[in-house]
Amino acid sequence: MREILGERRKNGNGKSNGKAHGLALRGAALVYARQWQWPVLPGAEAGADGGCCCPRAGCVVPGAHPLDPELLAATTDARMVQWWWTVRPRAPIVLATGGRAPCALSLPAVAGARALAELVRRGVPTGPVVAAPTRWMLLVEPYGLPELGELLSGLERVPSSLRFHGAGGYVPLPPSRTGAGSVGWARQPEPREGRVPLPRAADLLDVLVEAGLSAPDPGGWLAH
Picture (tube, rainbow, N blue to C red):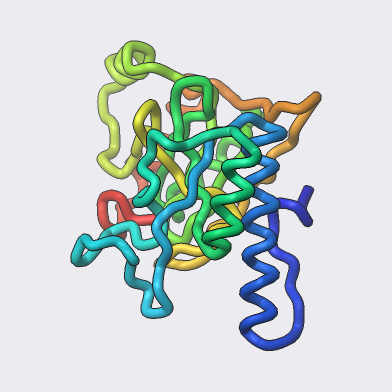
């Protein structure tokens, strides 16, 4: 699984490394879509200068958001995924969250690492954790707005740095490269019988709130 979802390192020129990364992206996207039924689509690509190919000046998530196609095009169809990453081999992989797909809770990287360490210390099971350069995203079972509202209503304080990626949201997946840097796994998925077990948001929320309140958000409000 590490070979499928990660990037194999090869010596050689930039062209060879770029081709290897493109193959790694396509292979990972196919695993997500075909094997795990996670709806994905190619994101906007970041340039060599770290900027975004989208028309927005000063894009805060360069290379880490949908552009063309739009988010609603996310699919689990292997043929479509194969074609997308054949035509656009450098495109980051974007997961459309919500519905039947995983949702996510995210914190700035420092707070996210702190929260994961505390969850492990307490023996709270976690699912996959995406480590982007400035934020960590914990994938959880799908949740809806009513459930989320009920969870938040019982909390005295919620840090502004804690974000919720539900229906209509998205997160980048490894081994994408964004304008801020590479996206990897802080905790690898552990598929069982063709699916990836995910925790409930309710089981993680208290620790994430505590970690978010203890660490400031150093980046933009949507920075990855």
